[in-house]
Length: 56
View 1 (cartoon, rainbow, N blue to C red):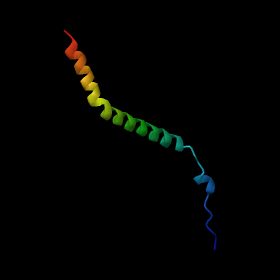
View 2 (cartoon, helix red, strand yellow; view 1 turned 180 degrees about the vertical axis):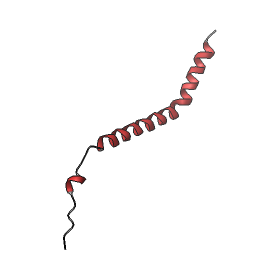
View 3 (cartoon, one colour; view 1 turned 120 degrees about the vertical axis):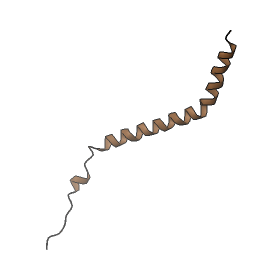
View 4 (tube, rainbow, N blue to C red; view 1 turned 60 degrees about the vertical axis):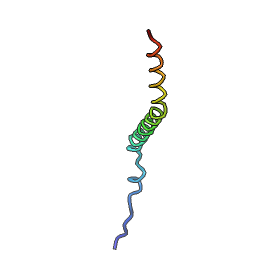
């Protein structure tokens, strides 16, 4: 009976890791932008409305 020995080199391949890492970074940046815009959105609208109201 032959033993099953997995090819460990197959599991050590790292070619696809960079695409996954870039995808995670883009997702985190998108979440950060959404959070900042959500937190500052009302304040920005108020600021721009104040500027518009001050115009003659």
